[in-house]
Length: 195
Image (cartoon, rainbow, N blue to C red; front, top):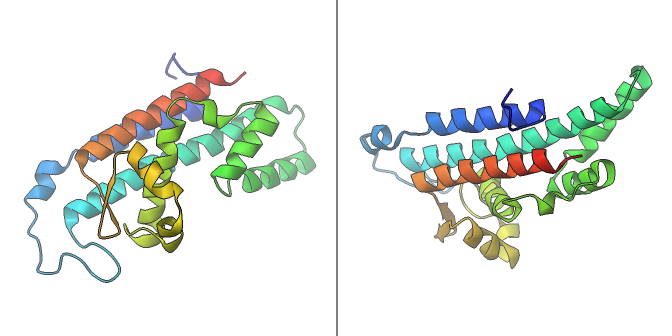
């Protein structure tokens, strides 16, 4: 395990971030891909380079979510001795409830682990990255109706320096490397702030 982190979940998350970033050094490969006549459909963008950027960004933010959820379980398991079936089921219920969304994650970490995730380095960046990921997941790269109506969305997208063109998030290779760097800083900060 990396000597600068204390938890297995953090180490796993950092390794996946690095592996994802290495995998998405595709600029040159995808620039040469023949582009079809149709670059955009009514459901989303068909440009291979844009799709690769969206997939990379999506994966990076998903790695952070999975790492935070895994860390919560790791912390809970470390604090409970003599785990029997009843406690195991209660821990499973707790894990399911805590991973519903980022608000429940924040509340659970504050209540169970005495840590406000918003105090971790790069949390503001992560909030913006989550908005980008949500546009990719729920709108195939286009802002959802909820995002379009929210006054917070433009502010959060400015933090991650992502533009919106024709209601679609406009990503490039710099966004991927920046996202990986900030996600790693968030996980390292979280790891170091835990008791």
